Amino acid sequence: MSKIRIVHCADVHFGAKFGAVSALADTLRAEQMQTFEKMIDFTRANADILLLAGDLFNTPVPEKELADKVAALLGRAAVPVFITSGNHDPAAPDSVYNTTEFPENVHIFKDENLSCVELENIGARVFGAGFANPVCRKITGLEDFTHGEETTDVLILHADLDGAPDGPYNSVESKALAALGFDYAALGHIHKRFIGDNIAYCGCPMGTGFDESGQKGWLYVEAEKGERAKIEFIPSGSRSFIVQELSEPVDEKLQGDPKRDIYRINVTGNVNLAEISRYLKEKVFYFELSDGRYVLPDITEVLKEQSLRGEFVRKVLEAEQSGEFTSEQCSAALRFGLEAFDREVRLFEDN
Image (cartoon, rainbow, N blue to C red; front, side, top):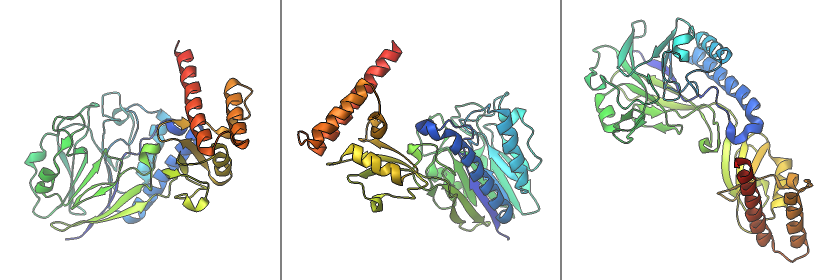
């Protein structure tokens, strides 16, 4: 039996707002497309099939220009492409999957009934199902799967592995899925990478916020009937969102690539917030300071404000410089005071 070479990608979320870092949104949306193009070119050069396991788009009705561009890129892959609709991009009647013309090499699993596409030229069968609505509690027909005598059998699902039995996102029990014996099961929905025996989540190819921190990419898989799949993580090289603690401004302590990556720095201990903010501005592509609960505004910018908030920050820092406050007291006062200012502003805007 020949090996089937697979690229497994999921949860791209085209059309995401990048709200956590809105100042970078346009840059990150462009880089998101570049990352996808890189994955498509990798697929064209190395794979027999491409599996996109749900939430390709962040909404079922993305902008037409975006949908058309993604469809064209899928054609460029030049191999069979299989998409399952997810909870963010369910295949409702007006969705991208029912209104956009996709190339002939693209097959979309649009509903909750398991179906199969046979690829005779490579000796494979691809099974899949999708979300027709934002909620999908159960895929029907999965329990009826039977092995092909000669084919390598692959599954693609957007699923919540071992989620609540009646959960809204297609909860599938891992033991039951393993017992079915697919030669490879490609899952989407969970944005963190998980690799098991012939079952895997690939994570997302590029983070969209600080809840998706760390290195991202896709999986390259060699699957063969009756064998354990060989699964390799391929880093996409996209910017990483990084969350880390820092108690003093020393560059060796910064994870990742400071000139490229996006940081949320949780400041701890006896730290001068103005000093660390000035330091990071010289070293880091983008950062925000946090106490682990509240994200602080840029202290160096607040210092320039001709406002009550700006005057408060200046007075606190002057008290630190004079020895009236320790650095730790200064940091605590700034965190408490700036959060109070923000809270009052929100109350004023709401009313």
